[in-house]
Amino acid sequence: MTSTDSKTSVGRLKSRPQFLAVRHGEARKGRTFLLEVLDRKDDAPPRVGFTVTKKHGNAVERNRMRRRLKEAVRLNAAFAMQPGHDYVIVARREVLGMPFDQLSRQLIQRIENRQTNNSRSNKTAPRKE
Image (cartoon, rainbow, N blue to C red; front, side, top):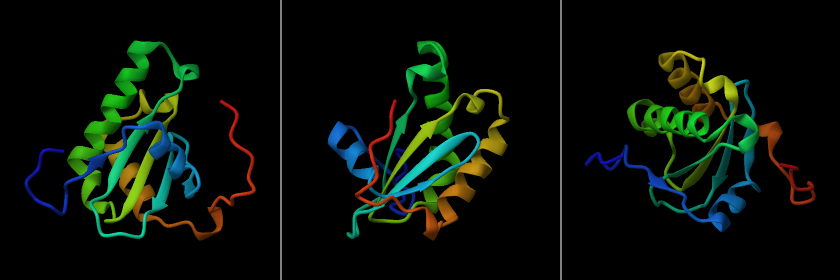
């Protein structure tokens, strides 16, 4: 994420309010991770955040999942992210056993594949975690 090319530079989501705001956007579900996308309606660089819940393993496994996803974004998926969008990647345990190239391909595919029928409404109850 330290690339000098502005097209592939990706910011980070760091605070809880930023993560919660993305939950009101579009959810793109998959077997290995959930991708939440929010259009901020500006031209700022895209931002990405990573979430791994405690139900998916101990601290070592959760950190490994997070590191694999960060590296997949840094090496392969940053170019597919649209300016003015926030992305939250919610990992599932299957991220650990999947080959890295396959994980990267799925991430790129999920970022590029826009699902119009899966937007969350404001009336939806919060997820139970």
